[in-house]
Image (cartoon, rainbow, N blue to C red; front, top):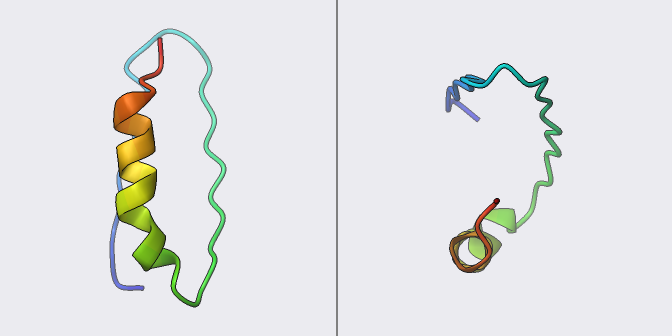
Length: 43
């Protein structure tokens, strides 16, 4: 994809990341996904 992403866990807790690559129009859904996460922040 040509995009480099960095992730850093700045807490003492264990963290994990699940990356699912879905080709074919997924980018079109990103604005709605971003919207959802902005309205539903992680505690």
